[in-house]
Length: 266
Image 1 (cartoon, rainbow, N blue to C red):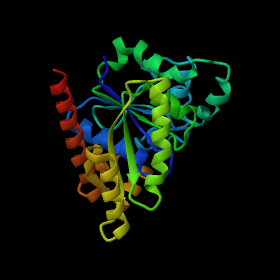
Image 2 (cartoon, rainbow, N blue to C red):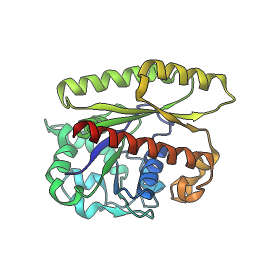
Image 3 (cartoon, helix red, strand yellow):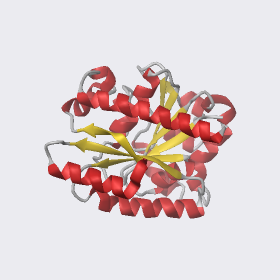
Image 4 (tube, one colour):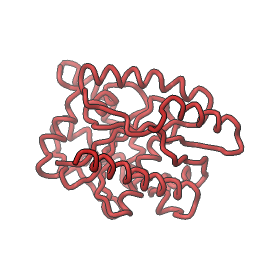
């Protein structure tokens, strides 16, 4: 069986969600982990950020969800050894309308992940799902499919207010569709140590989410913003910048979390 399936989610755009998927996945792969990224955002930014085309109709999660392509044939290797991808394209935005009469549409991805578990997914230690920045059907599909959630939280005004709505949605999903769903961690992003507000959000987030907040904080960093336009994770683009180093630190925290949960399950 595949390792933990983690949805990286925040209904607010521009919080570092896709940046986190790409760079945490790359950092884990560089530490020898076998990782799959599923791009569930019609914008396809995780796809292009890993050097693949978001115009590829055949190798897309949309075709997998509608049964036109098998998951096995949609998986692409990225330039980072050990990091694979099922990409996305704009067709995915039509899924909500196209599946309007399907009562089980929230389970589309979960069924594929469990059905193909004995073949193409069981080699991965983690599967990361990049969610769209909205509380749409695609977000529900990812919440139903996930074992755990990683929530990037930008250290800016109103950040925590937006999270309240997300937590309510998570609670509804847990009650009705996925009772085992839990928050693995909250990651503070776009941190600016010169800005008093960043520190205030840091304190408030830790008060609210307690030990769920990672010790690692991701700084506001130009190189993190530049890397996607070159079709590569920041760890490849500039491994020595502060942004890359923060994701290497996050990967170490993430691995120690996994080791602890395996230890407590044993």
